[in-house]
Amino acid sequence: MERIYLDYAATTPIHPEVVKAMLPYFADVFGNPSGIYSCGQEAKGAIEEARVKVANLIGAQGEEIVFTSGGTEADNFALKGIAYANEPKGNHIISTSIEHHAVIESCRFLERRGFNITYLPVDEYGLVDPDDVKRAITDKTILISVMHANNEIGTIEPIAEIGQIAREAGVYFHTDAVQVVGHRPVEVNKLGVDLLAMSAHKFYGPKGVGALYIRKGTRLVSFMHGGGQERRRRASTENVPGIVGLGKAVELARQGMTEEAERLTYLRDKLSKGIRERIDHIRLNGHPQKRLPNNVNVNIDFVEGESMCLNLDLEGICVSTGSACSSATLEPSHVLLALGLSPEQAHGSLRLTLGRWTTEEEVERVLEVLPRVIAKLRAMSPLLKSH
Ligand code: PLP
Image 1 (cartoon, rainbow, N blue to C red):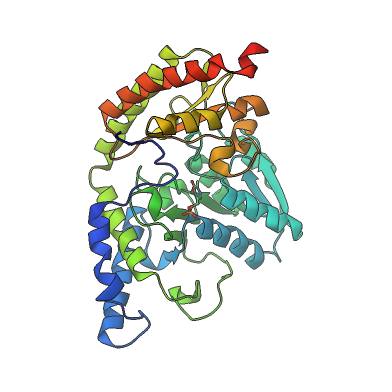
Image 2: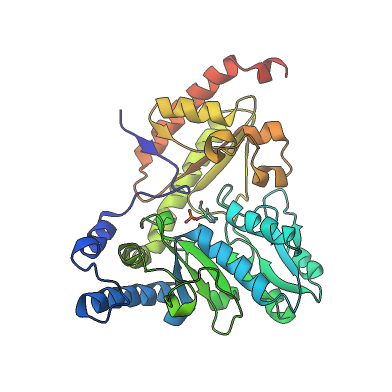
């Protein structure tokens, strides 16, 4: 059975060209980049080359990029780094109710240590209202953190408008752009952000490497103490193959980004429309237009996300859900609850995310299999019987 992978928002397969670029840095060019001998300096050179590529992708300067172990660390660094560096100025942070756990849990951690966090609500499509951001700012506000696009429902937030508000108020602005970088054009100056998180494994790079953009002049403290790597902002011997892989992934992402986004939008719309035509009692989660080109998230009544996932897996189709099987908890997705869905509804969600190797034939196969799986599950469903 051919496997159909539709969980590109969770992680992407690494591009063969990325693997090729990384390979020499495991054994041949293995030197410590801090070493002054040639094989250390060669590794250092490769890191700096990758840094320039990452910076160019988002309209930043090389020195504004700090490599991290991924999106989670970049988010933690941004939130905790700004909080502790700017505590004398204030202890208020504004974020939203639909952030990734990397941001939400960092906020909760700070809350337990005396910071005040405002979690802004979103509308039924998952959009944050920039006026809400404006109204929430106080003279104690030191940071606004709003994600660029949501990883579950794909909604793209009005980052540039919020950036303008943050700038006028003189408040630092962080965006978690993990789902956007490498897929859509991102320019830090147009967005008006001071900090931006990205992760390589979301755009065909390796897992365990990412970066935080930190605008020059931003006051933040480091939380990895040790050697003086990354201009003293993030200690630890650099993950050279990973960083080289991130650089290569960036290079590949720049080629044909627009065409790929158009191709995915076509497939996404075909999948989304097809599902809604073939299955009743269904609703699309997220914004109909302002959404990532590869994201379909639907709510299917009277069935559980987990059963759908497992049954689709038996048919060779990998998808994800907002309930237990993806999040390793029994809690329904906080994102879907924030849209106003009930816990029961939130348990019946399915996320299908497409990518570079998704074909039209695969979409057609899913449209053939999914209605059959839903009909079977509904026939056994106590939820439907009690309806
Ligand atoms: N932020 C968002 C929006 C994500 O989707 C993810 C990954 O799921 C992360 C942060 C965490 O990134 P990483 O897996 O690189 O730690």
